[in-house]
Length: 321
Ligand SMILES: O=C(O)CCC(=O)C1=CC=C[C@@H](O)[C@@H]1C(=O)O
Ligand SMILES: [Mg+2]
Image (tube, rainbow, N blue to C red; front, side, top):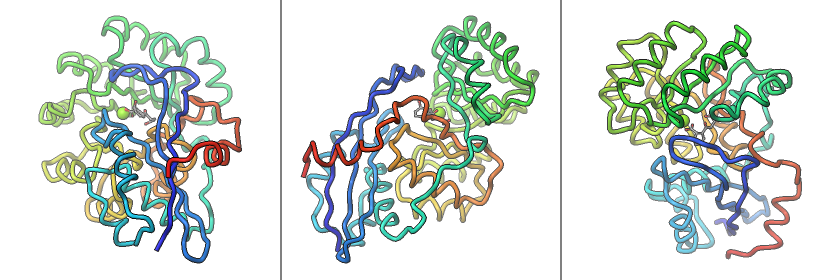
């Protein structure tokens, strides 16, 4: 049995992240602390992303308030799939209890660096390129008008070295016509690794058709935000890329079982979680056997990471249970 505690946190982004979903200014979540009977401690993080279909923060807080304490292993693996961020957090904390190597950061070249959206990328681009040893970058689209973004894109690729791979993420905000324009440009430019979620999840069949009409990869993200959606998309014929955000996908064991059951082309992606959730997600990503694609965890620059005592302060200054 495991006694546990939780604390709600707020973590402002250094600069708002602009996407088709809107402006993201504060990452909110819950840190959980599990204590085994022998005194071992395991940490986990609930980092909801409701625009991707996960539970909301308030629903997660209510769930934590209603959950038994102490917990059994069976009760952890019985968390309903309607709470995928909670499933991830409690399974992570359970695994964290018995993990010796408390996970390690990979070399920067293993990460895709999330660039500022739109024209905001240009003032800092030279510094970013000079200080980052990665060759994979991600840039949000479907925020400004198509003509504006095509103009910015042309300017951006003239500033990028030739060996760069660029990921474009529309967060489901393009029309079919605009998606075809971007995919045609991507096919010609040869710099685009993939276009992420060009259309909304409701236009899944249209995305399947686009993936057959163009050579540039298409990656599903919002369409495959949890285990059930991943399996459904594969069974319905998706053989393109699956962007997996472990922190909101649900059961860690369930995700392992899926990638053993199907030959999935996965790109692991952050939900801008703290180091607690990041550590578990990266540990999982490092278990995944295919290593060709950079991890979507080049996001630390979006936060002020200078306070090594943030967790201790959270635990001593606030009490949720
Ligand atoms: O996947 C990455 O490279 C970084 C993470 C990232 O892009 C996102 C994190 C969370 C929400 C989204 O705005 C965005 C995404 O859609 O992938
Ligand atoms: Mg995405």
